[in-house]
Length: 69
Image: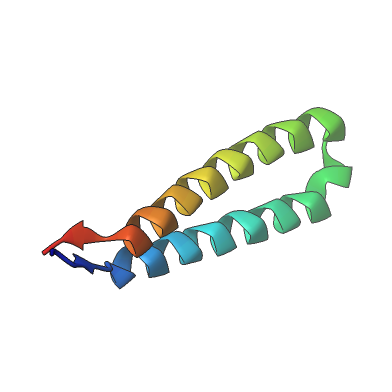
């Protein structure tokens, strides 16, 4: 029987990436009112933040599943 070894560095990196995406979204939300088109700005920011959070979730899952030893 083989065991799997978790890769916690990937989990920590994914968590930090998700936190950065969330903070980026909040920062852009605070300055959106000064934009010429705040609705379009927030749509683009939301898409970018969503993609980054999706990548970070994939990293967290891959790190927790680990690799065979």
